[in-house]
Image (cartoon, rainbow over all chains, first blue to last red; front, side):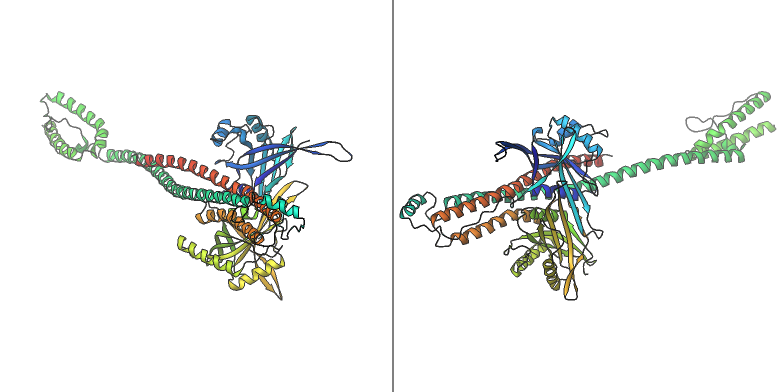
Length: 366
Length: 258
C-alpha cells in the first residue's frame, strides 16, 4: 500500500504562518507543487520481494484567497470560476490541494471542510487532493508562548487519513565528514596511478575543479537571490504606497457618500417642515385675517395696474361684488402661499386692493 | 521585570521562523533589532542572522564581535528609518526539544540583561512531531531572567506578532543573507581542511566531493525555495498593484464627479 508523505520547504511553511499572522480571521487558499511515486524494493530473509511504494508530494508554493469562503458556497459546492481566477497563470495540474488556518481550534477536519474537500476533488479531478490544516494556539495564559500545529490530510475511500508534513531542511541528509588525515598508502603503483589521474581533478592552482565549479554556480545563485530581493523590495514599497493612497481615497469616498446621504435626508426633512409650517401659518392667517383686503386677489394689467371695475346696476353690482368676495375668499389660501415668494407684488397688490375695496365700499354706501 | 510585552513584527517573525526551520541538526541563532518604548514594550522590527562558531549542543552564545557588528547594523537602520533602533534581544532555535530555555539559556539571558535590562530572549522550537497523530508542531516563546538567590529563573514575557502585510527592506535583506552565511560557513570549513599540507589527492578529492554535496544541499533546501518564494511574492505583488491601480482610478473618477 502506498504511504503518502508531504514535504514543504521552511520558507513556504513560514510564509503560511506569516500570512495568517497578518489577518485576524481564518485564512485559506491553494497549495501547488509536484508529486512523485517511488518504488522501493526490499528483500529480506522472510520475504523475497517486498515492494514499498511511496507517494511524495512536494509543496512548492501557496496562493492565498483574499476572501474567506470564496471558493465554495455555503453548501460546500466549489465555485470553479473563483478557483480558476485564483489560479491565474498557474496550471490546474500543479494544484496539490488546499489549506486552511484557524486559530484556537482542534487539529480536526470540520464537517464543512470534508464536504468542500470532496467537492474540490471532483472539481479539480484530482483523487489525491491534499488538505493542509494549520491551527495556531496560545500555549500559555501569559501569552508568552504560542504553538502552531500542522498536518496534511488525504481522502482514501471516503476516509480522511493524516499524512505527516515534513519540512525539507539541511539536517535531513546524513552529514559526511571531511577527512583530516591522509589515506596512508605506501604502494608505489598506487601512488603513481593516483598521480597520473589527479590532473583531471585539479586545476593549475591546486584547487579541485568541481569545487571551483560548484562555487561559481552558488555565487551565480546568490546574485540571482540579491536581484530578486531588490525587485521584491521595490514592489513591496510600491504596494505600500498604493495601499495607503487607496485607503485614503476609500475614506474620502465613504465620507462623501455619507455627506451626500445626510444632505439629501436633511433637504427632504426641511421641505416637509417648510410645508407643515406654511400650512400652519396659512391656517393662522386665515383665522385671524379672513376678511382682510390684504388677502384678496385682484386682476392686474400687463403693466401691473389693477383692471378698473365695470359700472353695473346696483343689484348687479351687489351680486357681482358678492361673487367677487366669494371668489376672493376662495383665493385667499392661494394668495397666502404666494405671499412669501412675491413680496413686492403682494405689497403692490395690497395697496391696489385697498383702493379697490374703498371704491366698492363707497359704492355700496351710495 | 523590566519588560511588560514584546511586539514582534510579522516580517521579522517570518525571517526567524525560516531560519529556525533551515536545519534540524543544530541550533541556529540571531539578534533582534528594534526599540524599547517608555511603556516597557519592546518592539522588534527586524533580525540579524548570525553564524555559530561553537556548534556544540546547548551552547548558543553570541560573541562580543557579533554584538558589536550588530550594534553597527542597528545604527545603520536607525539612520535609514529615522527611529532609535538598537539591539533589543536575541533568538535561537530548539530543534526536536522543548521550547523552554535551558539553565544555560537563562544564565546567558541574565548576562545580557546586565548590559541592558530591556534585553529579551526568544526561542523557536521546531521539528516536533506527534507520532500518533502525525501532527507537526512549532512553538515560540519570549523570556527574561530574574535572580533567585544564587540561581537565575525564567520570567515569561507576553509576545504578540504584529501584522505587517508589506515585508520591510531590512527583513528581506536578512532573509537572503541566510544562504550566504551558510555558504560562508561551509567554505571556511573546507578551506581549513584543504589547507592541511599532508593530505593526499584521494583525501582531497573526497573532501571536495563532501563540499560539493553540502553546497548542493544548501542550494536545494534553502537557496532554491527562497528564490522560488521571492518570485512568487513578486508575482503576487504585481497582481495586487494592478488591482489597486484600477481601484485608485475608479475612486478618483468617483470623487471628481459632481
